[in-house]
Amino acid sequence: MKQAISFKSIKRHHILLFFIILMQCIYLSFSFGINKKGFHSDELWNYGFANSSQGTDIFRENNQLKNFDNWENSSILYDYISVDKSEIFDYSSVYKNCADDYHPFLGFMLLHFICALFPGTWSAWYCFALNLIFFVIQQIFLFKLIRRITNNSYYGIAGVLFFGFTTGAEDILFFLRIYCPATAISVVFMYYLSELYNQRNSSKVPINILVKIAITTLIGCLTLHEFIILAFIAALIYGLFYLITKHFKLAISFGISMISSALLSIAIFPATIPHLFDSSGTFGSQVVKYSFVFQFKLYMSYITNDLFGVATSPWPSMFLWYLFYGLIVFLFFFIPFCFIFRHEKWLKNFFLLIKRKCIDFIHKFKFFNFALFALMIVCISMLAVNAYMTSIVHMGRVSNRYIMIIYPLFAAFVVSLFCYCLNWIFKNKKLKYIMCYGFAVIFATLSILMAPHIFRFNYPHEGVAIEDIEENSNCIIMLSSPFLLTCTTYTLGKTNHFFATTYNTALTADYKNSDINFKDEPLYLLIDTSLFNNNGLSVGGISLPSSNITYDIEAIYDKDTYLSFYKNLDIASNFEKVGTDYNLFGREVEIYRLN
Image (cartoon, rainbow, N blue to C red; front, side, top):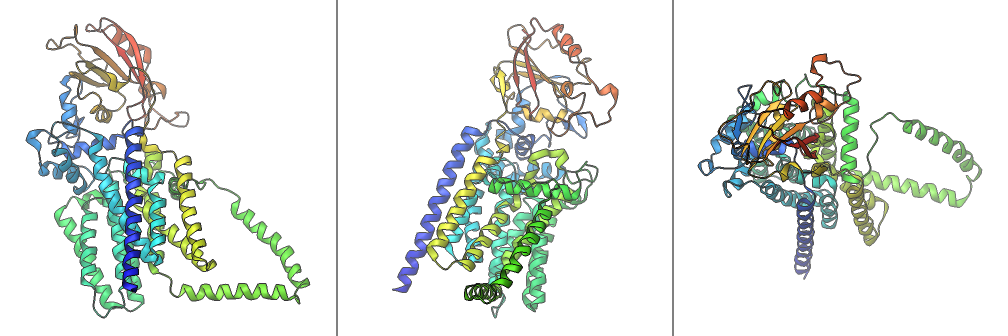
């Protein structure tokens, strides 16, 4: 009879979990289709690394510009982000592209596999579908992780309900990059570490779990370099715990499995070493940064905002002083109060209650799940590592991508800690469940309402937008930075021809081409005005005021000079502004019709 009840209970949990995850997948898919309007340059690079057999970049080769200052067939742009029939399952190009850049290859190979099923086409849904698969895996193991820590399936379901509807989960899923697979793998990894911890007192070393940990570590290391840092921190925490608690055999076995996986990943992808230690990448020391403390506070603000809708302030405040003053005022009244009523029975009962609660807490702390402590240390350490290594100055609010890998882990920590507190304070099971699920619904709702949803990239436009340009058109594109050509791959890839140029070469380039019918085919001029608007300055997609920055006076460009030049081009029979669009990595692009 007990076995039947247990089976029904497990089945009910699984059914509830299934419907919650299904509901979240439907909600996020509809939201993606409705709200995802534009793309970060890295999202299009994601497709380029996965599908291009002509190198990692569309705009350069061997540190020299390519596809600039000449009329080129626009199919070059589209071919960069799609799979040609001759490139189907060309994984060697994917491997080479990743080795030449700063990322492992596994996530890009998975994306290439999906794109190869639809040769000659491109869609944002391809990467979203891949992310959605990993989102489901992440949610399942998030449930298992919280259930393992709290020993309660309903708490695990509450954690899944909470996290899946947060803006943080949306950001991970909507950002068409390798962070979603890596985030899911991090949850799987931490779950298996908690499973190993749970079997630490077994007479035999749990080889099956060590194998799962080793495989997960290998997959994670080949998906995102940041996972290596997370795995190292987690392995160090658990390894020290096993040594301190004298589980020497388990500690040695665990260490061997982790080191073997890491070394195997390097053997498979040797470029990992220069990627991690090269100073010219994202984590390079030459990148301008805020102070470590300020960046740490900013990252903390991002994670609390994206998950709970309430952003902690990165700015200095008087909060601790107010707390201290409040404590002084409280003690000023409380101590005399206790002295006056020291013989009253109700006051004695109150102190006895406090004493029992403290003893009860200490007793329960003995059975505290170490996995919860490990989650806390991993989250804090990853925030610290990113605060030290990355640049929020350079990447702005989208820097939260670097801490996405701990979003579900932080959610698991907070939910588990909250449930521990509920168990400590309350005895009524229904009341605890009501409070737990109320917590999940309230803060998920706050997250949806208060967080910025930055990866929707719903850029404004007026008049003709870039993606409205006719397919039989020819386009001149003047860019503030060559890498922005990547952002035109999906909008202009179906036009006839394009002529990409920069502020420095636009006025001296030769725009004539006898093979192109400028008379009958629409001719457009797209001007990225960010350098005009910011006195020659543009950094990482973020427009910066120039008042506090020293720059070369020759870098200031006169807009009227450029407009006059294009107005008098031999191939231009008209000059009419037809629209303004920001769908070029947030840059303002003015669109002119030249015929």
